[in-house]
Image 1: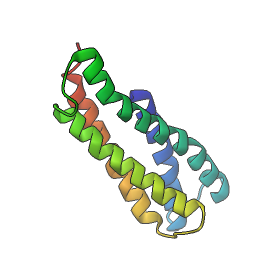
Image 2: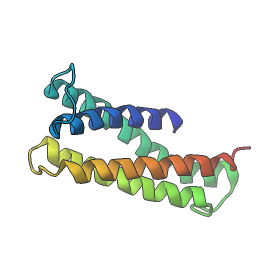
Image 3: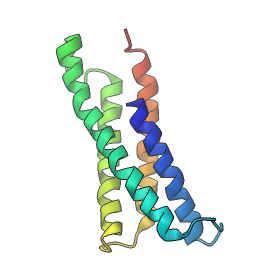
Image 4: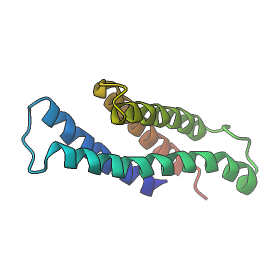
Length: 129
C-alpha cells in the first residue's frame, strides 16, 4: 500500500504543476500536454493499486488475523479514502474525456483522499505484528 501511495504522491505533484500552469502562476519546462499525459499515465495505475489494496485489506483482516472487517479505525479511514480516490478517478476520467471542465473538484478530492489515506496508514502502524 505504501508503494501505491508513493505513486499517488507523484501523480499529485504532476497534477499540482498542471494546476499552476492553468492558473498562470508557473511556467514549466514541460508543455501542458506532456504534463497531462504523464499525470494520467501515473495516476491510473496508482489509483488502481490503491483500490486493489483497499479491497484486499478486509480479506487480510479476516483470513490472516481473524478480525471482523472494518472493526478498526484504520479500516474506516481506508473506506473513506477509497471512496474519495474512486470519486477523484471518476472526475478525472470526465476531465480526460471532455465531459467536464471542473479540474478543481478533481484535485481537491484527490488531495483529500491522499490525506485521509496517509492518516489511515499511520493508524495502521499500530496493527502491525
